[in-house]
Length: 390
Image (cartoon, rainbow, N blue to C red; front, side, top):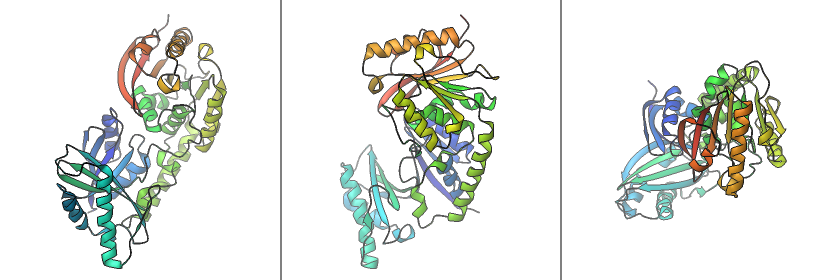
C-alpha cells in the first residue's frame, strides 16, 4: 500500500472552501479547511497532482515532524532529530521559511526562528560530513517550512518552492494586476467551468494584462497551471519520484493538447493600449495567443462577442485602489460599465471584482451573490449579477 502523507496548502483568505473542493476532486482525503489554508492527506501522487493542477493554492507543504519549540534550544534539538540526509545532499542548497501563531514560545522573531532551524540543519551536515550546505533564498533545492503554533513546531518541506500563483506566463504585469490564483477564484465563483462546458463565451471589457482571460482559457482548455512553471521545490528533494512526476506531467500535457481543440470564444478589450500589449505578450507566453481575441475599446463602447452560444459570461477586475488612484474616475468607469451592460448585454451573467460597496453601487445593477476576496492586501467584493432585459 502506498505511503500516505499529511499536507497543508496555503491560500488567500476567503478562498479556503474553494481550495478544499479542488483538492477533494484531485483525490485528497481528510480535507479540512482553516484560516488561509487547507489540511489534507494523500499519497505522493495526490501531492504531485495538487502541485500540477491547483489553480488556487499558493503553497503545498509536506509535513515531516512536530517537535517542541518553547525555546530556541528546544527547537534546535527538535530539528536535529530529523535525518536531513534523507531529504537533501551536502552540495544542495536550502531555504527556511518561519511562521507562527498563538505564541507560547520565546521565539518571537521570524528571522531568528528561521536562523535556528537553518543552523540545526547545517550543523547536522557538518557533524556527519565535515561540510555544510549553502543557502539560496531564490531557488533552493530544498525549501524547509517551520510553523510554530503555541509551543509546538511543525517542520515541513515546501513542495512548491515558490508561490504556485506564479504560473510563469506573466511577462508583463501592467498596473496593479489581479493575482493568477485570485483570478481563478473569481472565475470559479462566477461559474465559468459550467459556461465553458456549454461553449459559451467569456468577455473581459477591462482586461488589463489579460490574467482573467488567460486563466479562463486554461480552465476551459483543461490545462494544468503547473505545466507553465519551470521550477518546483520537489524536483531536487531526495525522496522525489521522478518517474511518477513525469507520468503525471505527460498526462497533463496530453489533456492540455486535447483541450485546445474545444475552447469557446474568449475575448478582451481595454482602453489602455499598453495593457493590451501586455495581454498579448502574456497570452503568447501561455501558448494561448491564437485563442484570445483582444481589441482597443473604451468601456462605454463595448459589445458582446458574436457567436452561436451567446449569451455568456462577462467577468472583470474593475478599476479601484492602485489600479486607478482617482476615486471619481473609478466611479465614472463603474457607471459606464453598468450602462453598457444594461444596454447591450441582456441575458448575460456578469461577475465584477470591485474595491468597495460604494463603487459597486455605481454600476446600477443588483448583485444576486456577493463574495469577499483578497487581491494581495486589498479586500475586494465580487459581485455576481444577472443582466436582465430593460
